Amino acid sequence: MSAKAAAKPAAKGPEPPRRAPTQERARKKVDAILAACGRVLAAEGYEGATTSAIAKAAGVPVGTLYEYFPNREAIFSAFLENTVEQVIEAVARVSPAQMGKSPSEAVGNLIAVAVHAVSRYRGEMRALLSRIPGALELPALQQLQGGIAEIARALSWLDPETAESKDFERKLYILTNTIFGFFIRLATGPEPPMKPGEITRELTSLVLRYLEVEE
Image (tube, rainbow, N blue to C red; front, side, top):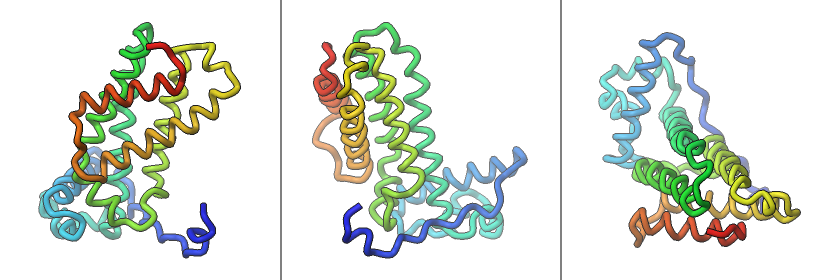
């Protein structure tokens, strides 16, 4: 963290949910609220995603929404966390099936799933991350970065000799942050000038060349 950043007061994080849903009916209400949050963000943007608009889209009274979330910032935080979990789980589901495949095919499959998952929530994440102060420090995005690190580390099976080299940890650090930065840009930046398949091919090539793994 730079001295300039350190001098700024820490951004106030969102308040935690008022109560966690413990019954199936309550969980369905929370799921409906989070799904509605995504729809409203995509359609109306940050300013239009009020608690009233989210409650209406979810088909619940505003009072019901406040039973679970103290304010819209808490809804946004829960939505981000839920979205990140879905991205990580999507990649994790296909990871075991990559064992035994060629490096280019295995890495390409993982990246393709990640690109699709992030692109799916692009509008919602752009509306949020461009407006929330200190967004990159939110627990949800720290979780995303950690998930990318775990996936990158799992690539060691592609080339055991590379994984045993003393530079592997350093390369993982650079690779994790590079990919994290790319996906944040994909989620929040303008429409990319490349199709998803082209993005997947370029990222796959970048990963394999950097790790010095033969395709």
